[in-house]
Image (tube, rainbow, N blue to C red; front, side, top):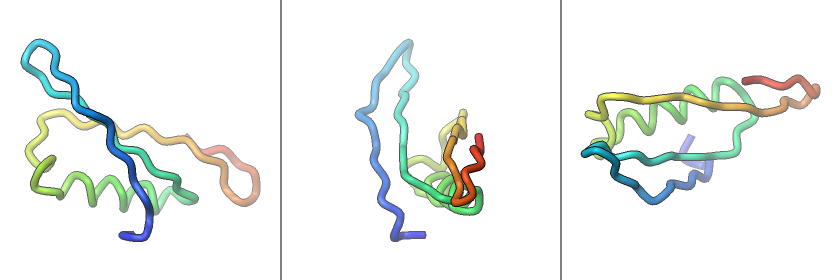
Length: 66
């Protein structure tokens, strides 16, 4: 899982809430779930009160997952 390169946006604050996004290229739903677990367990983000998981990718057979 550590070999998947991730990017993180700059944080932005609105009405006292801090927002930021992480992104990565993945090839399977399993990779998406593992990346989500990895980010959610990071001490810096573990206590975030709201998390949203969004993904979309095309697998090797051409099927789109979202």
